Image (cartoon, rainbow, N blue to C red; front, side, top):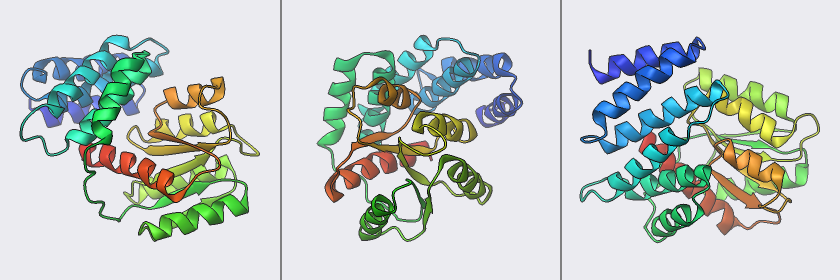
Length: 249
């Protein structure tokens, strides 16, 4: 049975909350590919880690393997997206608390020229401040995005994102931490459960080292912006999400 079919079977088990079976299938595939196809293996290890996470178990080994494989992939001479691989590696190391390795991978990615963005993805803005939402809308329009959805609370944002998923769209979510109905980390967690590869950029007035922000970052969001922010800061964060997205395609 080929990898694609095995992966589809594993994803079906994951969707049906059969996490142990899904984990074992993803892990077997990841192990079988890790010496030949670094990128596929890394992504399969991440899926195996997600299965453990949904069981409430630690997934250090899977995440560490994924991070190391992303780095290996980035070193291949003909890798089409070295930058995206390094950003994914950085996220893995950050989740592991290996801050020096995370910083090293991020710094290497930072100096690389990002791939040209083909603006086809919708932007979802989640903020209860109309002033902030208008500012974000103005900024992303300047970056070339034209499908923009604005929500003032977490529940509506989750419904809106589900609708976009049903239309086979992959939005970038600009998520405020302080919403009137749900905390940002709760919204991020719910959105990521619906779509493992969703890109979320957290926007908050909180310091990055606060427990609330750390909890949200560890849930798997792509980037963090602190208020007040500039167009350049937003662009850099969107570049990161687009690099991750192109790597996962």
